[in-house]
Structures are given as structure tokens and as C-alpha cells.
Length: 301
Image (cartoon, rainbow, N blue to C red; front, side, top):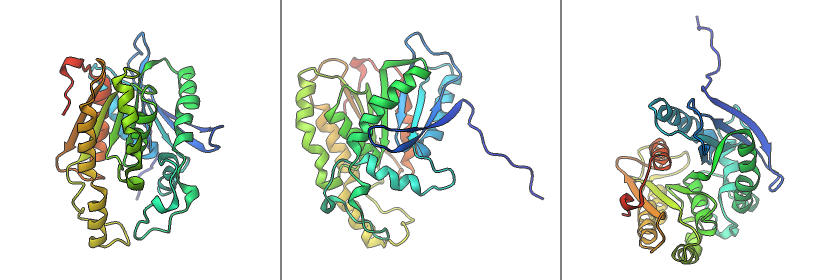
């Protein structure tokens, strides 16, 4: 006989739906408020894209930071209303996390339906939603520090983070790009890297940047997605250059001469692939955002 069951509740977490006037899309917003009192300046804020997936891990780890007496953040996950549907968020994310892209620049995925242009290219509206609509709503409801805000994204989310960093480097204090899809549309995101470097050298912004990637991401995983063959997977990984692209970008960004406060860190995480790296990257994100990082100790490697 089955025991009586009930849904799992995550202590300190709440959710609400919010429709953007900018994009017209409805988002599910997940919020974790740590059990510790907000500091005088307000809680630091960590915004997680792909909130349906990333929020539970981030909230749990953030709660551990608080219980150990450390600095804790208000964690805000941005996802989609999909109570019993794990697939829908992965379709909807494609539009929010990718920049305007011609259909020819959207790589078909073996085993998946052909891409449709309307399902991509909405990153500009999504960034505006995060900064112009969601941020004021969170600030009205919680005591938060407007000067200590972190943006995290994985995969296409990492691509999105890089796009925001390059075009709007003052919009967040910390930027964390986990396994960023730099390969997207023939590395189009890198076109604005020189202009970003000029802004940093001129002192227009001093962001802190963390780029993470699984060290095994250029090797085929043991289990392949449905409909994909091993040669197809090898070809995709060769073209994507996940580890090499991330490392090379971090090295270039770290060489920029900037005002104090600007720092770049890079980690290729041993024994992790594109999926297993996610919880590790979330843990590293919280440590990066919440622990003091004096400029003189900032590692640029």
C-alpha cells in the first residue's frame, strides 16, 4: 500500500506569474528568501535563467550559505508556467536566450523538428524584462541591494549572459556564463567584444565575470539524445568547441586593462560534461557572488 503523499515544499521559496508588457510573454518567477535577515544594504540578488531547472538547486545551496552564517542572496529564478510539462520550458527558452538570428544561423538538431524563426531571437526583450520590469517588482517586495546583482545562465543562457555583458556591462555587478554557446550563429556574440573591451578600458563599467565549462564537454557523453548518432554528436561537439571557446574568451577578457573592480575568472571543471556541470556551476556562482573578492586577490587566468 502506497503511503500518503504530498508535494514537496521548498522552505523559503515562493512563486508567482508575471506577464511582460515588453515581450508579451508570461514568466514564472521563483523567489528564495534566505532565513537570515537582510543586511542594511539589502540582500544581494542572484537572477537565474532557466528557473524551472536552476532555481531548486540554487535555493537549496543558498540556504546552506545562510545556515552556515555566511552572506546569502535573494535567489530569483526566471522560468515558465509548466507545472507538469518538463519539455515546454526548453522550447520557450530558445526565444528568450538567443539574439536576433537569421534562419540560416540556427543549427538544426538531429532528432528534433526543423527550427522556426519565431522561436528564436528575443534576447533583447528578455533583458529589458529582467531589468525594467522584474527588477523593480522584486525591489518593491523585498529588501535588496541594487548595486549587488548577479546574472547566471547555462548553455544558451550562458550565451545570453555574454550578450548582456558585452552590450550592457553596467546592468549587473556579476556575470556568470556557464558553458556558454559561443558557437551560436558563427560566434556572432563575439562581434561586440571589441566595443566591450573599449568600454572597460575607458572605465565605463567594472563588472566581475565568471566563465565556467565542463572539462569533458568536447567529448561525446555516454548517453546520446534520442535520434542522434555518435558520429553526429562528435561533429556537433567539434564545431561547438565548448571548452576551447570558453577558455579563449576568458583569456582575452582577462587581458583587458581596466579600473579596479573588474575581474575575470575561468574554470574548466574536471569530470563534468554539459549536463553534470550545471549543479557545480550553480554552487560556484553563489560562491563567486557572495564571498568577498578583493581586487588584489582576484585570479585572472
